[in-house]
Image (tube, rainbow, N blue to C red):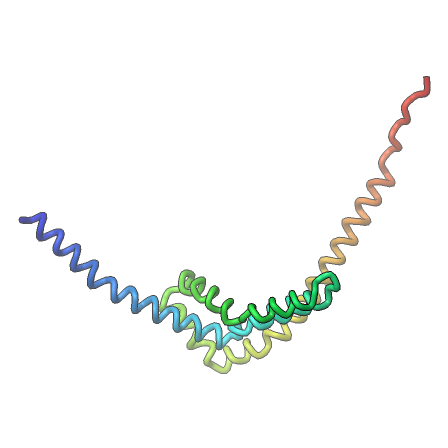
Length: 157
């Protein structure tokens, strides 16, 4: 009898917990979407598509009909649908709510407003940094090659 009582208790606990967990996941999903909208992350798919299309259309080896079909299939909202579960998995309900609340403040809105310019300038700096590093590596390798002794030529017989 004790075993039956334990099984009934466990079953009831699982049944009651499932709707609460589902409601929590739905709330996290909604907050993740709102957060992505407030931060501009939801527009990321559009930006990625525009960059990809610029690359596709500038490459003469890619036929125009390929680029047209790619664009027809590429819907930025699909990327949002793929990213929302990452937010839901990474953050709890309290954190998502706090982030949404913050990005609705003047300070949060100011951060979001400045982010495109910061991102653009960061990309330029990153490209310059990469080119500088490449030049340093090339110069170092050339110096090593010049300093290396000439390989010995095989003796003639």
